[in-house]
Length: 103
Image 1: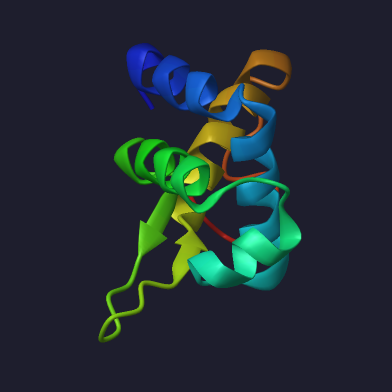
Image 2 (image 1 turned 180 degrees about the vertical axis):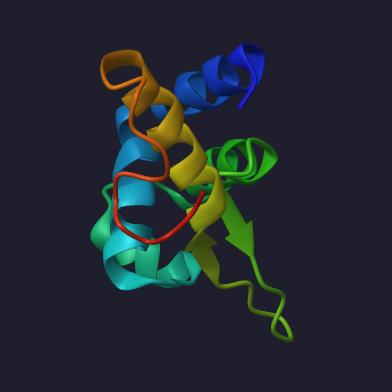
């Protein structure tokens, strides 16, 4: 992952609410906006703003299903970020540290 790309994605995650959203999605696999709103103390407008940022930075994907749009973590992007961060402390280790097999 290029430095600028990593920095932009890290900036997206520097907001506590966005970090919590990605954590919730990672734990649950896929959630719609109404399910996220039940778990967070934010308005629908605020959630919409955060989801726009997370999808634009490719940290979260949205699958259109009729009028619904379930959100899910983008595992590929998150693993690439983890690899980039791992390379700072363990440059001799190859592959993703989470064990998912991503190279």
